[in-house]
Image (cartoon, rainbow, N blue to C red; front, side):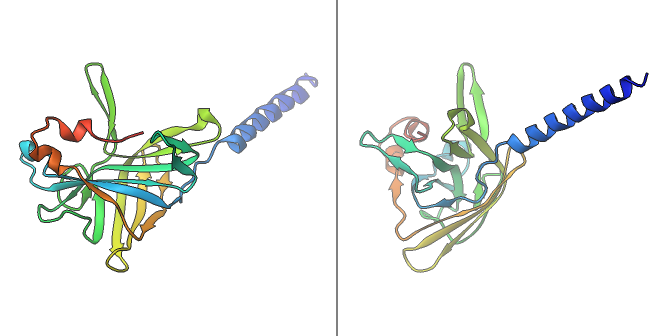
Length: 207
């Protein structure tokens, strides 16, 4: 019986050490990235067929270690923020100042929360998400943005600043900001006017 006591102690110690190793090796993703470049898309009233009159914008923002190669492909390591459907009033064609809330209401000044859309054999991301491109490929992942807010402000006529305060689908936080002197906004609402069908879904650049 005396021999069993040290053996039990040894087993307990090994279990504790194993738990400590797991805790220490848990990978921590960047929670406060500084996005240095990006672009936006204006889609107009692309949900008018669903009786939604609000205009829609999208925002893509990248950290400086991510770049596009000569084929237009995203390369490097870092964070890529994609806010798919940002709703503004029918009078707006750019981002008005103020706070935007992550919400599925599709009201003005809201951002569609991220989710995985499934229909038949089709699967695609929609709404807001963040991509983490890591040096270890197995750690590269995409996380959906499910709650939080984004604040937009202008320091002059051309410099726009986006500040993020998001909650991800794994209950972690994502903060950070994106500031640029000239935000490129592509007007894809003209595709609708030209009669092209399914223009919004077919022309998104998701990488």
